[in-house]
Image (tube, rainbow, N blue to C red):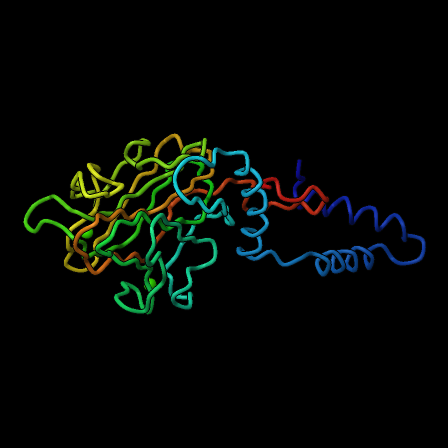
Length: 283
Ligand SMILES: [Ca+2]
Ligand SMILES: [Ca+2]
């Protein structure tokens, strides 16, 4: 169990004063002890906290069922909610904590300096005329209550013009406690806006056949807002966007940008180290 910073400081300060009170005025020792303590404390930027939490996150996931889904990366390096514009990335590399996994040969998910909503970059994947199943995994993060995902996307996918049938589509999935990905709606989530608007044509090898999905051709970017399932409250959430394509025809592809998660991090994960050697309680 971690102790409060203030309590820990009081204890250290008090011990230091008792050890030296015969040689130096107490007031001076209080000041110097405080300064020494401050100088000894490591700087804990957001990235460092996230990195520290990551070790625990990965360890906790190791016991999950890895048989679910394809090519799962099993890398979950962040515990804080992602807020990602992809603009700090160097294309085609994905930002730290983001992963591309796929079944089938071809381009996975990358960052691109072409077609972004916020300049210069967006995440992107193409829409080939061959069967491929490919996902971009977001960094996992903790949810206390009422988690909500927002992002912007646009697409030019192989579809049936003028209908709600798409031959290639994209879905949002969430990992359940056993590590198996399932559709965000099936898991109990809901779209506030910008939800699925197509059905994936049920043939030609598409792994998403018959599922509701995003598809077709959009006129520019659209905003998507998703309420995460209530079952994700108090858990580490792992999301991915997944594209499935069939064996005919191609489109240009799919762009993702400005991903943001509104969620309250676990209170004990905000300022976590009591500097008492117990480390990160999120670990
Ligand atoms: Ca961007
Ligand atoms: Ca196609």
